[in-house]
Length: 117
Figure: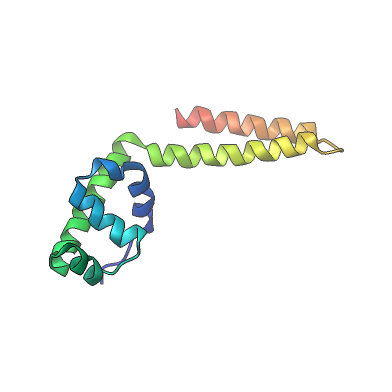
């Protein structure tokens, strides 16, 4: 059975516009609109096997782009940093501000940023 890799949906958000129009349409219908292979086949007028082939090729292209560019992983890292910084801001704004813990969190964020380079 052909299972959806939902990580591909995330990559489609980053790199989908790089795909050719037909591949982008098929993959968007399958991943974002949550249509079955048969439903996508009816939508674009090709066989179910043809849809599966286009999706596999599109997944390979998206995975290749992520391996080379790493934008999705970098975005995930930056999102995690933003959440941690929100926590630090909350700590510093609280009445019993725990500056030691805030400093520890800021140092952890700094280390994450160094690793992401």
